[in-house]
Image (cartoon, rainbow, N blue to C red):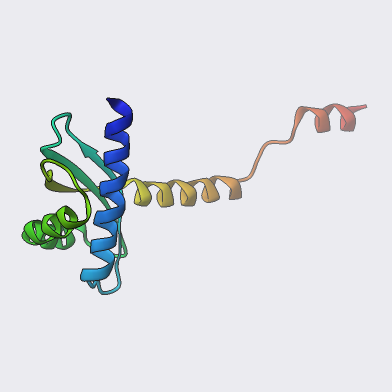
Length: 124
């Protein structure tokens, strides 16, 4: 059963991404569907959306308003007994990843203590 859910999750992720790319225009934003989690009964789906370049609240509000439109487009391309009700959620993992890389760059620029091998060779 888990393999089937994984296949459905990936299929829905690709189709929702295609709908967002074709039918929505986001000014100065990069909006991507990073993951989809469907319930066991296939009635509900959490859609995790990454948003770079701006506020997530406006995008999530717009997706919430257009949820029926997106579900209709997806239901025409994905054949399931029930089309899951979509629940859009913000996925901040991309932003956290960028912050982590920046932090690692800052740490790399900090001065470091001399290595023990260097101290021993200079003391002899």
